[in-house]
Each structure stands twice: as C-alpha cells, then as structure tokens.
Image (cartoon, rainbow, N blue to C red; front, side, top):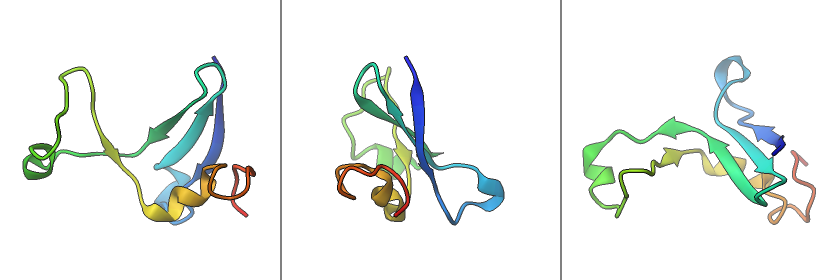
Length: 75
C-alpha cells in the first residue's frame, strides 16, 4: 500500500491537518481531519464501534481528482 498525499488544507496553521491521501492499493481515499467528538452530532449517525468520523472543510474538495478533472492537486 502506498498513500499519496493529494493536498493539505491551505488554511491550516503550521501546514498540518486536514490532509487528503489516495491509497493506490485499495483505490480509496484516506482523510486526516478533526475527530468528531460532539455527542449530539454523533447521535445522528449509525456509527459502528469499529468506525469513526472526521470532519474537514469543504474548501478541500478541490483535492479530489473527480472534482478537478482528475488532477488531484490544488489547481
């Protein structure tokens, strides 16, 4: 498995999270983001114990190749 960094949140302090990666083995995306801890929000999800959810800003959608004509990077 190789993770390929597609983009970091351009407004992140210290060039940190959130970050979007592409896994070339599973053909899936991996998102590093802010863990959702708000119980009210979590209660609205059908979330199995072995899963979690993260939050990321919509400005990062541009890093998904399907959104920007397959480029997968900040355009």
